[in-house]
Image (cartoon, rainbow, N blue to C red; front, side, top):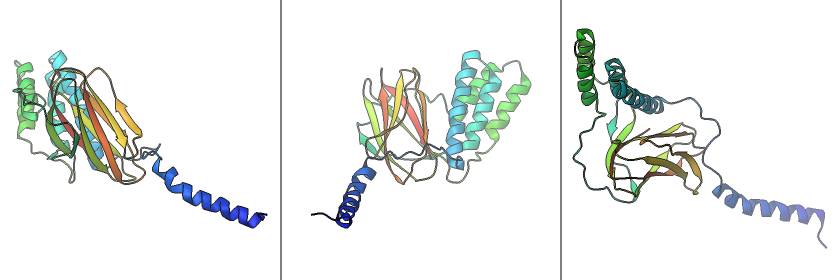
Length: 226
């Protein structure tokens, strides 16, 4: 006959044995985002700058492009090689990077023709050195083949805000998904554009699968992360 003490012991043992299984299925994302670190804030600034560029190009607004170029310079970035978990880089596309600072400012000066003040402002931004924060965002450029996907495995620190921003060349619709090490979907950005951002805060330090899904023709994209 089982005593109350033995029943309690059995219950505790069951709880101990079940704990690793329960933890293994836990989602690695905190409901609270927390304050952005300088590197996370820099990724946010890059995303905002890209939206400004899209707006400025659509309206041929030089000031929007000049502001965006200045934001990109202030954010800074470091070239990186991200660990590819699935897929391989598509064939190179002979297409200029229209979202580089130099290209943005060149278009700004074209839009500002006849306005010497705006042209001078664009030239001042071009001369200004990058002032990105130490440990700023990391970035890489690649091509995802048509109707396929690229998958990266990236590691993020527990308790610190995480950012992944992807910007394509405009030739197709891209979707972004983030999964934790247990296969839980952490974030997705599946609008009809090829500019996407995911933000979250990991509960613990771990690896995440970053999935970039291409719904159309080959797309030359750049990815930023902190």
